[in-house]
Image (cartoon, helix red, strand yellow):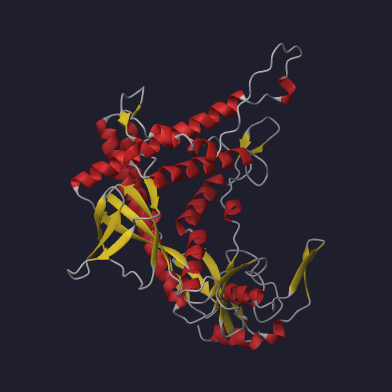
Length: 455
């Protein structure tokens, strides 16, 4: 299995200057390739409804630039320094390893291919933007010459041998597994220094876990909760708390952003506030990621082998409401004000990223994570075929027949587990009413009642 660890680099002053020079050369090379592709795009196409009737001579068409054709320019660019006209800089391409420049070619090819292909609906989005110094922050090093060296002083540091730079000091806050092979480095410049992503290939961890047959005992259902201070509800009757780091930092972030926007563009004060704003965003992202990793490890330590979660359509859930107008063209309230707050909560929870992290951690532990369609799972009672939770405001239900208080989120998590085990009834809509068919609820009613009683 291939996985990536991130560490903080402690380069010397000379190494910092060299890394900054590499980053500038890669940025220039990326923008140059993108500009060449845009030139081909504009000069080698004509709209169907704009073709002239009388043509004296057809223009000479260029071949479409691709990864291989643009990579051929590198040997010529390395022979002598390249002069940048608008800034007067002299960039020496021979300072950067060849594999790093070829990775920049791949990045430009991928960015332009996404623009030409469009999305799944065939709609083309905006052009890839030219990268400024603040937007181009990383480059990749791979191939021969990469070595890891451990330090004998308390194992606090690692030393990475990088081609054309030498040994770079890395803070070792995490042990690298024995037998893992170093395949690739990605150096990233962030607001608080340089970081390195070390890509490792560990042959001891299987890529695909052994086929696991899900059962009631070895599986766990999870319901994404976006209410109160709860983050996840599990089919074992537990609720995991949420962090809401963006909500807690929203006032401070808005204050910094407001002060930055009031400054003149290009001024030193604006750049300082932009760096401060970036550090605040970085703190929010790191807190969220740390919380998600800890939550994922807590779930994997339960010993379950199959994790079922809601396959959420987050793009649809965060879409803006449609505009409403009356006969005179005046805009009517459409609930977008309240929806904006809900969209912020979805972004703060970042469930898609969490389920991805959970899948990686579960894969290393020999477990699997499966997404399931959550249709009607939050409405149907998990131990009886009844539609109870018809409104989101109904958080609890008292069952006089069983003398039991049913929590909405725990009930939904049990239903997600039943969907994964193919034990959820078939539900159809007929003339606006919900009809339950092919019920198998009796097979799991005792287990569901037992979990709800133990809450």
